[in-house]
Image 1 (cartoon, rainbow, N blue to C red):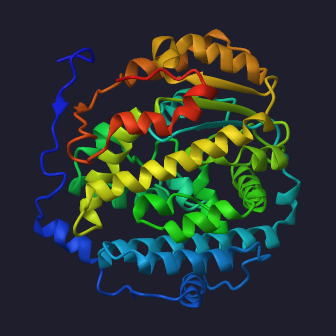
Image 2: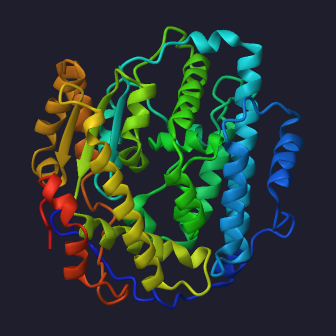
Length: 422
């Protein structure tokens, strides 16, 4: 079987998952982790784990943490294990913040590390951003974040030569266990510790990352997040990028290649904090995005929800995608044509090499033969649907009216030349 005829994957228990003993245990979560927890208890646990107590300037993260937890406990369909996961993420994020602040206190020169002309990739979930950032990261003139490094950006004590970083080992162990529960995830969005990942993980440390919404249903949190300016949180991300570059020995700075769907709704904040950034925005038919996204989230919901409620998930994410797109339309002019490009998904799929050249010209980068060979190597090593192609059923399983959905997204189709896929 070749890439032209991928293996078709039918997930026939989406609405009523088969619950194995391993899945049941995951839904319950570890007995030794407290649940529920207050915001003060999350902060105290982070301090106990690190032995540190200085979180730096309060940019509003404490308030946001409280809102996240309030919203978390309002999600009635979430299992105990689902709540524990979010609490663990919150503790990890606050521990990371403590470590970042401690590192900068001991090495204030970190704040002198330049962050110049970063390249940001924004776009809807499932619109090709992960493929694009992993592809362009083959250019060794650009620095990106691996999944494991984004999860724990401050290194521990120096390691002996050849020894694996324990941060990488922890990430690989967690995502390996998760992948064993939902093996079809590799065909949709593999979470591999060494792959290039989203920089919005760094926004976790300011409690302003929309990734919370992938793990549970948090309308209270989403409303709070969208009602407040996010510029200070991107300024905190910039500080973390400086710390990572300094740890890599890049004291004169690096050119970052960064990506996240969340950037679509934060274009003005990014322009304020990174005024010389290049912004690459991918655009895909939101109906097709929802086909893919609801299937991916609906499939993984079996690890954290009981019942899973696919129609409720589709309603939630239809509204969330609309909010994201309306923010993108409203803020698109924050970046002018001399610093930004809109990449239509169908054009990108038809001519990936040509699109790369357009992005490179915009970013002021040449494309020497050795770099182009590395980029082409990624394409040949990672054909589309190599792990199989999931069959989606947005209408049947998720109960969505496609015609009504297209009417709802008319404002987006009118603003960007998006091809309606099916």
